[in-house]
Image (cartoon, rainbow, N blue to C red; front, top):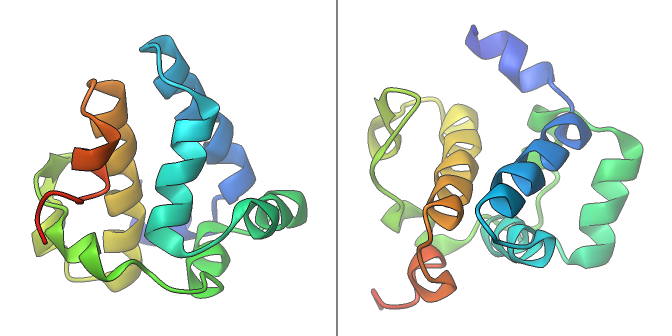
Length: 119
């Protein structure tokens, strides 16, 4: 998938996939929401507004209140790329979210996922 196409995918279309991935591994929608809100600064209400507006990923991240300053602590490989080495900032944010949802599905604790142990 080329970069431009992924930017135009609606957040509302990938959100249920995140939930499905988490729930298949015994995790919850609330945990997915916690991760999204931690990364983007949205609260539950503004997150739901983004879903209801059917905003694309580019708009979703552009309107995010504040990307968590600890997002730079997210490292590892997702979709064959090291997230910390992705140069395009929007693509990096998208892959940060993918990585966090992967970690949730793999059974990591929320404390580790939200980078609370590396202060």
